[in-house]
Amino acid sequence: MGYWKDVQERLGGGNPEAHDDEYVCAACIADEGLQGFIEGEAGARVCTFCGAESDDPIAAPLVEILLYMSDCLDREYDAAENKLPHDSAEGGYIGQIWTTEQILAEHLGDELPNDDDGALMEALCDGLGDRAWCRKHPFSLTDDEKLNFSWDEFSELIKYRRRYFFLNEGRDDQEIYSPLALLNELAGWCECFSLVKPVSSDLPLYRARFQKPDEVLSSTADLGPPPQDKATMANRMNPPGIVMFYVCDDAETALREVAKDPVKDAGRYVIGEFRVKRDAKILDLAEIPSVPSIFDYMPDCLEYDPRPPLIFLNYFAAELSKPIARDRSIHVEYIPTQVVTEFFRTAFLHDGKPIDGIRYQSARRSDHRSLVLFATQGDLVDGALSENLFPDREHWIEMTDRAEQYVTVDDLERWNREAPEPFEWV
Ligand SMILES: [Zn+2]
Figure: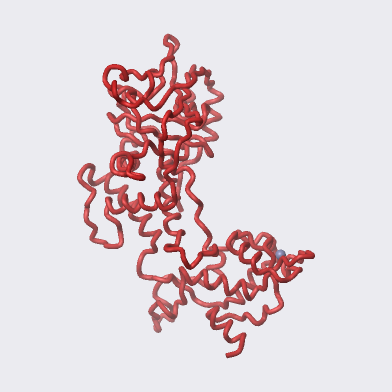
Protein backbone atom coordinates (compact mmCIF):
# COMPACT_ATOMS: atom_id res chain seq x y z
CA MET A 1 0.00 0.00 0.00
CA GLY A 2 1.33 3.42 -0.90
CA TYR A 3 2.20 5.90 1.80
CA TRP A 4 -0.60 8.36 1.01
CA LYS A 5 -3.18 5.65 0.70
CA ASP A 6 -2.15 4.39 4.11
CA VAL A 7 -2.36 7.88 5.64
CA GLN A 8 -5.72 8.45 4.05
CA GLU A 9 -6.99 5.17 5.46
CA ARG A 10 -5.75 6.01 8.95
CA LEU A 11 -7.52 9.36 8.74
CA GLY A 12 -10.75 7.74 7.55
CA GLY A 13 -10.74 9.76 4.32
CA GLY A 14 -9.67 13.28 3.53
CA ASN A 15 -7.07 14.75 1.28
CA PRO A 16 -3.82 14.69 3.27
CA GLU A 17 -1.52 14.59 0.26
CA ALA A 18 -2.50 18.13 -0.68
CA HIS A 19 -0.93 19.28 2.62
CA ASP A 20 2.36 17.45 2.30
CA ASP A 21 4.52 20.58 2.48
CA GLU A 22 2.62 22.41 5.21
CA TYR A 23 3.86 22.92 8.74
CA VAL A 24 2.15 24.39 11.81
CA CYS A 25 3.81 26.08 14.79
CA ALA A 26 2.60 25.84 18.40
CA ALA A 27 1.62 29.52 18.41
CA CYS A 28 -1.01 28.82 15.75
CA ILE A 29 -2.91 26.32 17.93
CA ALA A 30 -3.73 27.29 21.52
CA ASP A 31 -4.95 23.85 22.56
CA GLU A 32 -2.40 22.60 25.08
CA GLY A 33 -2.59 18.98 23.96
CA LEU A 34 -1.85 19.88 20.33
CA GLN A 35 0.83 22.37 21.38
CA GLY A 36 2.59 19.58 23.25
CA PHE A 37 2.37 17.36 20.17
CA ILE A 38 3.69 20.11 17.85
CA GLU A 39 6.61 20.85 20.14
CA GLY A 40 7.50 17.15 20.24
CA GLU A 41 7.28 16.71 16.46
CA ALA A 42 8.63 20.07 15.29
CA GLY A 43 10.99 19.64 12.34
CA ALA A 44 10.55 22.80 10.24
CA ARG A 45 11.85 26.30 10.97
CA VAL A 46 9.00 28.14 9.26
CA CYS A 47 5.28 27.96 9.95
CA THR A 48 3.28 27.75 6.72
CA PHE A 49 0.28 29.46 8.27
CA CYS A 50 1.53 32.42 10.37
CA GLY A 51 4.92 32.76 8.67
CA ALA A 52 6.85 32.61 11.96
CA GLU A 53 10.53 31.76 11.48
CA SER A 54 13.20 30.56 13.87
CA ASP A 55 16.72 29.12 13.85
CA ASP A 56 15.31 26.10 15.67
CA PRO A 57 12.56 23.77 14.52
CA ILE A 58 9.19 25.29 15.54
CA ALA A 59 6.61 23.71 13.24
CA ALA A 60 5.32 20.14 12.87
CA PRO A 61 4.06 18.56 9.62
CA LEU A 62 0.34 19.17 9.22
CA VAL A 63 -0.17 15.55 8.15
CA GLU A 64 1.33 14.27 11.42
CA ILE A 65 -0.94 16.64 13.34
CA LEU A 66 -3.94 15.34 11.42
CA LEU A 67 -3.04 11.73 12.25
CA TYR A 68 -2.68 12.60 15.94
CA MET A 69 -5.97 14.52 15.97
CA SER A 70 -7.72 11.63 14.28
CA ASP A 71 -6.48 9.18 16.94
CA CYS A 72 -7.70 11.54 19.70
CA LEU A 73 -11.12 12.08 18.10
CA ASP A 74 -11.54 8.30 17.73
CA ARG A 75 -11.76 8.06 21.53
CA GLU A 76 -15.14 9.82 21.46
CA TYR A 77 -16.38 9.74 17.86
CA ASP A 78 -16.80 7.37 14.97
CA ALA A 79 -17.88 7.60 11.34
CA ALA A 80 -21.66 7.72 11.09
CA GLU A 81 -21.56 4.99 8.45
CA ASN A 82 -20.09 2.61 11.04
CA LYS A 83 -22.68 3.19 13.75
CA LEU A 84 -25.89 4.86 12.63
CA PRO A 85 -28.79 3.41 10.65
CA HIS A 86 -29.46 5.16 7.38
CA ASP A 87 -32.90 6.20 6.27
CA SER A 88 -32.76 5.77 2.53
CA ALA A 89 -36.18 7.38 1.98
CA GLU A 90 -35.13 10.55 3.81
CA GLY A 91 -31.55 10.24 2.64
CA GLY A 92 -29.95 10.79 6.03
CA TYR A 93 -28.63 9.12 9.14
CA ILE A 94 -30.92 8.43 12.06
CA GLY A 95 -29.17 9.99 15.04
CA GLN A 96 -26.99 12.98 15.80
CA ILE A 97 -24.20 13.67 13.32
CA TRP A 98 -21.57 16.37 12.91
CA THR A 99 -19.57 17.53 9.91
CA THR A 100 -15.78 17.66 10.22
CA GLU A 101 -16.02 21.44 10.43
CA GLN A 102 -18.53 21.23 13.29
CA ILE A 103 -16.37 18.77 15.20
CA LEU A 104 -13.30 20.96 14.83
CA ALA A 105 -15.26 24.11 15.71
CA GLU A 106 -16.47 22.37 18.86
CA HIS A 107 -13.02 21.35 20.03
CA LEU A 108 -10.77 23.95 18.39
CA GLY A 109 -13.16 26.85 17.73
CA ASP A 110 -11.38 29.35 20.00
CA GLU A 111 -7.98 27.75 19.78
CA LEU A 112 -6.61 29.01 16.44
CA PRO A 113 -5.44 32.50 17.44
CA ASN A 114 -3.61 33.40 14.20
CA ASP A 115 -6.18 32.02 11.80
CA ASP A 116 -7.85 35.29 10.74
CA ASP A 117 -8.28 34.14 7.14
CA GLY A 118 -9.46 30.65 8.15
CA ALA A 119 -6.68 28.95 6.13
CA LEU A 120 -5.57 26.65 8.95
CA MET A 121 -9.10 25.53 9.79
CA GLU A 122 -9.71 24.94 6.10
CA ALA A 123 -6.54 22.84 5.78
CA LEU A 124 -7.47 20.77 8.84
CA CYS A 125 -10.99 20.14 7.50
CA ASP A 126 -9.65 19.27 4.06
CA GLY A 127 -7.03 16.92 5.49
CA LEU A 128 -9.58 15.06 7.59
CA GLY A 129 -12.12 15.09 4.79
CA ASP A 130 -15.72 16.18 4.83
CA ARG A 131 -17.63 13.33 6.39
CA ALA A 132 -20.36 12.58 8.87
CA TRP A 133 -19.22 11.93 12.44
CA CYS A 134 -21.30 10.45 15.22
CA ARG A 135 -20.65 9.62 18.84
CA LYS A 136 -18.71 6.46 19.47
CA HIS A 137 -21.69 4.99 21.35
CA PRO A 138 -24.56 6.92 19.78
CA PHE A 139 -27.35 5.14 21.62
CA SER A 140 -26.15 5.38 25.20
CA LEU A 141 -25.16 8.22 27.50
CA THR A 142 -21.53 9.21 27.59
CA ASP A 143 -19.84 8.65 30.95
CA ASP A 144 -20.00 12.37 31.82
CA GLU A 145 -23.65 12.60 30.79
CA LYS A 146 -24.42 9.59 32.97
CA LEU A 147 -22.83 11.30 35.99
CA ASN A 148 -24.27 14.77 35.32
CA PHE A 149 -27.77 13.46 34.65
CA SER A 150 -27.56 11.30 37.78
CA TRP A 151 -26.73 14.39 39.85
CA ASP A 152 -29.64 16.32 38.32
CA GLU A 153 -31.92 13.39 39.02
CA PHE A 154 -30.58 13.07 42.58
CA SER A 155 -31.28 16.77 43.20
CA GLU A 156 -34.80 16.55 41.81
CA LEU A 157 -35.55 13.44 43.86
CA ILE A 158 -34.57 14.86 47.23
CA LYS A 159 -35.91 18.33 46.59
CA TYR A 160 -39.33 17.34 45.32
CA ARG A 161 -40.11 13.66 45.80
CA ARG A 162 -38.42 12.05 48.81
CA ARG A 163 -36.55 13.47 51.74
CA TYR A 164 -35.40 10.70 54.08
CA PHE A 165 -35.65 7.24 52.54
CA PHE A 166 -34.09 7.58 49.17
CA LEU A 167 -30.60 6.14 49.04
CA ASN A 168 -31.47 2.92 47.29
CA GLU A 169 -34.23 4.35 45.18
CA GLY A 170 -34.20 2.03 42.19
CA ARG A 171 -33.84 3.21 38.65
CA ASP A 172 -36.00 2.00 35.81
CA ASP A 173 -33.40 3.53 33.60
CA GLN A 174 -30.27 1.49 34.18
CA GLU A 175 -28.15 4.26 32.72
CA ILE A 176 -28.66 6.56 35.72
CA TYR A 177 -26.99 5.90 39.08
CA SER A 178 -29.11 5.40 42.18
CA PRO A 179 -28.51 8.14 44.81
CA LEU A 180 -26.18 5.94 46.87
CA ALA A 181 -24.30 4.71 43.82
CA LEU A 182 -23.85 8.32 42.69
CA LEU A 183 -22.47 9.37 46.08
CA ASN A 184 -20.04 6.46 45.96
CA GLU A 185 -19.00 7.41 42.41
CA LEU A 186 -18.46 10.98 43.58
CA ALA A 187 -16.37 9.83 46.55
CA GLY A 188 -14.31 7.55 44.31
CA TRP A 189 -13.50 10.30 41.81
CA CYS A 190 -12.66 12.74 44.64
CA GLU A 191 -10.07 10.22 45.87
CA CYS A 192 -8.87 9.48 42.36
CA PHE A 193 -8.08 13.17 41.73
CA SER A 194 -6.60 13.59 45.25
CA LEU A 195 -9.14 16.20 46.33
CA VAL A 196 -8.76 15.39 50.04
CA LYS A 197 -6.08 17.78 51.27
CA PRO A 198 -4.57 18.87 54.58
CA VAL A 199 -5.36 22.25 56.12
CA SER A 200 -2.21 23.88 57.40
CA SER A 201 -2.18 25.18 60.97
CA ASP A 202 -0.61 28.34 59.48
CA LEU A 203 -3.66 29.06 57.38
CA PRO A 204 -5.87 31.77 58.89
CA LEU A 205 -9.61 31.19 58.56
CA TYR A 206 -12.14 33.96 59.06
CA ARG A 207 -15.70 34.27 60.26
CA ALA A 208 -17.58 37.59 60.46
CA ARG A 209 -20.60 38.51 62.58
CA PHE A 210 -22.73 41.64 62.76
CA GLN A 211 -22.30 43.44 66.07
CA LYS A 212 -25.31 45.37 67.31
CA PRO A 213 -24.61 48.87 68.69
CA ASP A 214 -25.28 47.77 72.27
CA GLU A 215 -23.20 44.57 72.28
CA VAL A 216 -19.57 43.51 72.08
CA LEU A 217 -18.68 40.20 70.45
CA SER A 218 -15.28 39.27 71.73
CA SER A 219 -14.98 35.71 72.98
CA THR A 220 -14.26 32.54 71.02
CA ALA A 221 -17.78 31.45 71.82
CA ASP A 222 -19.17 34.66 70.28
CA LEU A 223 -17.26 34.25 67.03
CA GLY A 224 -17.17 30.47 66.61
CA PRO A 225 -19.97 28.29 65.24
CA PRO A 226 -23.42 28.99 66.66
CA PRO A 227 -24.48 27.03 69.75
CA GLN A 228 -26.95 24.26 69.00
CA ASP A 229 -30.05 26.19 70.08
CA LYS A 230 -29.14 29.06 67.74
CA ALA A 231 -28.49 26.88 64.69
CA THR A 232 -31.97 27.41 63.34
CA MET A 233 -31.13 28.44 59.78
CA ALA A 234 -30.88 26.28 56.69
CA ASN A 235 -27.51 26.93 55.13
CA ARG A 236 -25.69 25.72 52.06
CA MET A 237 -24.17 22.71 53.84
CA ASN A 238 -26.32 22.18 56.94
CA PRO A 239 -30.03 21.82 57.63
CA PRO A 240 -31.49 23.66 60.65
CA GLY A 241 -30.34 22.08 63.93
CA ILE A 242 -27.03 20.66 62.71
CA VAL A 243 -24.17 22.94 63.67
CA MET A 244 -21.31 23.60 61.27
CA PHE A 245 -18.57 26.19 61.25
CA TYR A 246 -18.42 28.36 58.10
CA VAL A 247 -15.18 30.22 57.50
CA CYS A 248 -13.51 31.97 54.56
CA ASP A 249 -10.04 32.38 53.14
CA ASP A 250 -9.85 36.07 54.02
CA ALA A 251 -11.60 38.65 56.16
CA GLU A 252 -13.33 40.52 53.35
CA THR A 253 -14.77 37.34 51.86
CA ALA A 254 -16.12 36.46 55.32
CA LEU A 255 -17.78 39.89 55.46
CA ARG A 256 -19.21 39.55 51.97
CA GLU A 257 -20.67 36.16 52.86
CA VAL A 258 -22.76 37.62 55.70
CA ALA A 259 -23.33 41.27 54.72
CA LYS A 260 -25.56 41.36 51.66
CA ASP A 261 -28.47 43.75 52.05
CA PRO A 262 -27.61 47.45 51.48
CA VAL A 263 -30.72 48.48 53.41
CA LYS A 264 -30.29 46.33 56.52
CA ASP A 265 -26.73 45.08 56.71
CA ALA A 266 -24.59 48.23 56.97
CA GLY A 267 -22.91 48.54 60.36
CA ARG A 268 -20.11 47.26 62.55
CA TYR A 269 -18.86 43.71 62.13
CA VAL A 270 -16.46 41.63 64.14
CA ILE A 271 -14.15 39.22 62.38
CA GLY A 272 -12.67 36.26 64.21
CA GLU A 273 -9.46 34.72 62.87
CA PHE A 274 -9.06 30.99 63.54
CA ARG A 275 -6.50 28.27 62.97
CA VAL A 276 -6.65 24.50 63.21
CA LYS A 277 -4.35 22.94 65.80
CA ARG A 278 -4.06 19.39 64.53
CA ASP A 279 -3.79 17.63 61.18
CA ALA A 280 -7.10 18.36 59.56
CA LYS A 281 -8.19 17.02 56.19
CA ILE A 282 -10.80 18.58 53.96
CA LEU A 283 -12.40 17.78 50.64
CA ASP A 284 -11.28 20.57 48.32
CA LEU A 285 -13.92 21.26 45.68
CA ALA A 286 -12.50 24.73 45.02
CA GLU A 287 -9.53 23.49 43.03
CA ILE A 288 -10.67 20.70 40.78
CA PRO A 289 -8.35 20.13 37.80
CA SER A 290 -9.80 21.64 34.64
CA VAL A 291 -11.20 19.34 31.97
CA PRO A 292 -8.41 18.26 29.64
CA SER A 293 -8.85 18.81 25.93
CA ILE A 294 -9.79 15.88 23.72
CA PHE A 295 -6.33 16.41 22.15
CA ASP A 296 -4.40 15.96 25.40
CA TYR A 297 -1.88 13.16 25.27
CA MET A 298 -3.24 10.11 27.05
CA PRO A 299 -0.68 7.42 27.83
CA ASP A 300 -1.76 3.86 27.11
CA CYS A 301 -1.15 2.91 30.74
CA LEU A 302 -3.87 5.29 31.98
CA GLU A 303 -6.69 3.12 33.28
CA TYR A 304 -9.47 5.61 32.59
CA ASP A 305 -10.21 8.64 30.45
CA PRO A 306 -10.06 11.65 32.83
CA ARG A 307 -12.37 13.81 30.73
CA PRO A 308 -15.78 12.40 31.78
CA PRO A 309 -15.16 12.44 35.57
CA LEU A 310 -13.58 15.89 35.40
CA ILE A 311 -16.49 17.24 33.36
CA PHE A 312 -18.74 15.89 36.12
CA LEU A 313 -16.64 17.12 39.07
CA ASN A 314 -16.45 20.63 37.61
CA TYR A 315 -20.19 20.62 37.00
CA PHE A 316 -20.88 19.31 40.48
CA ALA A 317 -18.58 21.84 42.19
CA ALA A 318 -20.19 24.71 40.28
CA GLU A 319 -23.64 23.45 41.31
CA LEU A 320 -22.48 23.15 44.91
CA SER A 321 -21.33 26.76 45.14
CA LYS A 322 -23.87 28.44 42.90
CA PRO A 323 -25.44 31.62 44.27
CA ILE A 324 -28.95 31.06 45.60
CA ALA A 325 -31.29 33.91 46.53
CA ARG A 326 -31.66 34.05 50.30
CA ASP A 327 -35.42 33.76 50.34
CA ARG A 328 -37.71 30.87 51.12
CA SER A 329 -36.28 28.84 48.25
CA ILE A 330 -33.11 28.11 50.24
CA HIS A 331 -35.06 25.58 52.29
CA VAL A 332 -35.41 23.54 49.13
CA GLU A 333 -32.43 24.58 47.02
CA TYR A 334 -29.82 23.76 49.66
CA ILE A 335 -31.09 20.23 50.34
CA PRO A 336 -28.93 18.42 47.77
CA THR A 337 -25.73 20.07 49.06
CA GLN A 338 -26.79 19.35 52.64
CA VAL A 339 -27.19 15.65 51.81
CA VAL A 340 -23.84 15.48 50.03
CA THR A 341 -22.21 17.22 53.00
CA GLU A 342 -23.74 14.76 55.44
CA PHE A 343 -22.46 11.90 53.30
CA PHE A 344 -18.90 13.25 53.39
CA ARG A 345 -19.19 14.08 57.10
CA THR A 346 -20.60 10.75 58.28
CA ALA A 347 -20.11 8.01 55.68
CA PHE A 348 -16.85 8.88 53.89
CA LEU A 349 -13.43 7.84 55.16
CA HIS A 350 -10.07 8.95 53.81
CA ASP A 351 -7.19 6.68 54.88
CA GLY A 352 -9.64 5.14 57.34
CA LYS A 353 -10.52 8.44 59.01
CA PRO A 354 -13.37 10.91 58.70
CA ILE A 355 -12.60 14.27 57.09
CA ASP A 356 -13.05 17.64 58.78
CA GLY A 357 -14.76 19.80 56.19
CA ILE A 358 -15.37 20.83 52.58
CA ARG A 359 -13.83 23.79 50.76
CA TYR A 360 -15.74 25.34 47.87
CA GLN A 361 -15.80 28.41 45.67
CA SER A 362 -17.37 31.40 47.43
CA ALA A 363 -20.79 32.16 46.00
CA ARG A 364 -20.24 35.84 46.88
CA ARG A 365 -16.73 36.53 45.68
CA SER A 366 -15.01 35.13 42.59
CA ASP A 367 -11.60 33.55 43.11
CA HIS A 368 -12.10 33.22 46.85
CA ARG A 369 -12.99 30.21 48.91
CA SER A 370 -15.37 29.30 51.67
CA LEU A 371 -14.82 26.35 53.95
CA VAL A 372 -17.32 24.52 56.08
CA LEU A 373 -15.68 22.75 59.01
CA PHE A 374 -17.53 19.93 60.73
CA ALA A 375 -17.12 21.60 64.12
CA THR A 376 -19.25 22.84 66.99
CA GLN A 377 -18.43 24.95 70.03
CA GLY A 378 -17.09 21.77 71.64
CA ASP A 379 -14.28 21.64 69.06
CA LEU A 380 -12.96 25.09 69.96
CA VAL A 381 -10.28 25.99 72.44
CA ASP A 382 -12.26 28.07 74.97
CA GLY A 383 -15.54 27.36 73.21
CA ALA A 384 -18.78 27.95 75.06
CA LEU A 385 -19.40 24.37 76.08
CA SER A 386 -15.89 23.02 76.20
CA GLU A 387 -15.41 22.92 79.95
CA ASN A 388 -18.78 21.60 80.88
CA LEU A 389 -19.97 19.16 78.29
CA PHE A 390 -16.88 17.98 76.44
CA PRO A 391 -14.01 17.81 78.96
CA ASP A 392 -12.24 14.98 77.10
CA ARG A 393 -12.87 16.19 73.61
CA GLU A 394 -10.01 17.39 71.47
CA HIS A 395 -10.26 21.15 71.04
CA TRP A 396 -8.72 21.52 67.62
CA ILE A 397 -9.71 25.00 66.47
CA GLU A 398 -8.34 28.11 68.14
CA MET A 399 -9.23 31.79 67.73
CA THR A 400 -5.97 33.62 67.05
CA ASP A 401 -7.13 37.19 66.42
CA ARG A 402 -10.13 39.48 66.36
CA ALA A 403 -10.79 42.64 64.36
CA GLU A 404 -13.66 45.06 63.80
CA GLN A 405 -14.73 46.68 60.57
CA TYR A 406 -17.49 49.11 59.67
CA VAL A 407 -19.33 48.06 56.49
CA THR A 408 -20.94 50.95 54.60
CA VAL A 409 -23.86 51.02 52.19
CA ASP A 410 -21.32 51.75 49.44
CA ASP A 411 -19.38 48.59 50.35
CA LEU A 412 -22.55 46.52 50.21
CA GLU A 413 -23.64 47.92 46.87
CA ARG A 414 -20.21 47.29 45.39
CA TRP A 415 -20.01 43.77 46.79
CA ASN A 416 -23.40 42.95 45.30
CA ARG A 417 -22.32 44.32 41.93
CA GLU A 418 -19.17 42.20 42.04
CA ALA A 419 -20.90 39.01 43.23
CA PRO A 420 -20.90 36.13 40.73
CA GLU A 421 -23.97 35.90 38.56
CA PRO A 422 -26.29 33.01 39.32
CA PHE A 423 -24.78 29.99 37.70
CA GLU A 424 -26.31 28.57 34.55
CA TRP A 425 -24.90 25.46 32.98
CA VAL A 426 -25.21 25.22 29.22
ZN1 LIG B 1 2.26 29.49 13.08
